[in-house]
Image (tube, rainbow, N blue to C red; front, side):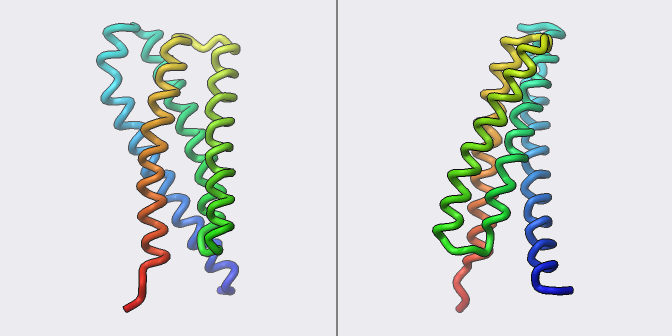
Length: 142
């Protein structure tokens, strides 16, 4: 296996691990928010919550791409990738939520609320995962 293929495989492995962590976190948020949302918003609230968390999860998946692509590069490239990732995540979350609201998804208020909640939770989860990954890559050799 060539070095480029090995590097691509390693990046893919990192992406899958971070994406699965985001997915598990989104499911945990969904489970934690189900009862209060069902109680206050009914079935439309639960549908909106599901769509909103889906929008946040899609944004998280898209935002991980530039970060993972920058692994193994110099610090300046990683910082640039971080800025791109933040912008991508934000634009995808807003655009997806907007498309769903304009498209007539049920529970629009709940959709927007849970898009925001999911966005913040997944941003925190991804940040921890990325920092751990960078610490693994840049661990000092003694």
